[in-house]
Length: 144
Picture 1 (spheres, rainbow, N blue to C red):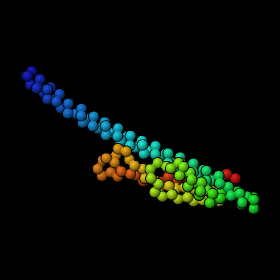
Picture 2 (cartoon, rainbow, N blue to C red):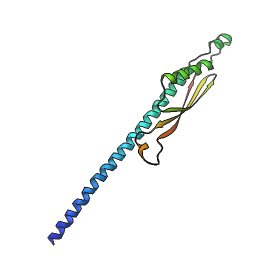
Picture 3 (spheres, rainbow, N blue to C red):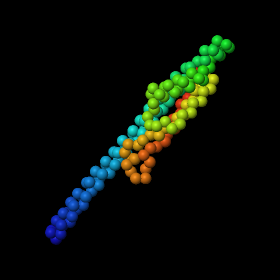
Picture 4 (spheres, rainbow, N blue to C red):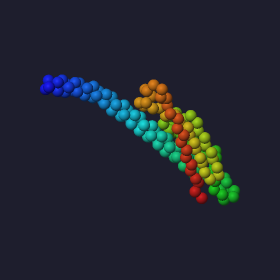
């Protein structure tokens, strides 16, 4: 009976050796997914901050002619649009800017940008797109 128990232990040691590389591969894959998702989240937040700063700067473009004519404070649409375009040229958002919609109302600026952000690790997996599309929105109001 003792010789059989020794053989069983030897077989179990071999099965444990097979699990170690498998667990290491799973750990590497999970780490890659975590790095990839974190990278995309950071890029999304950075794009949101850039779009918000552009909207905020554009909302500060007061139409001085209108103020002189009837003492009403409102945004100068042409100046606000130039500020948004200049801001995005000077500080481009991460990824590729697919679409940019700028709506300028008398007292607010609304920007909606569509971006594609490249994935770092998950693009290597078959069947996964290498880029994801995200929409970033921001609105700034001209304080009276």
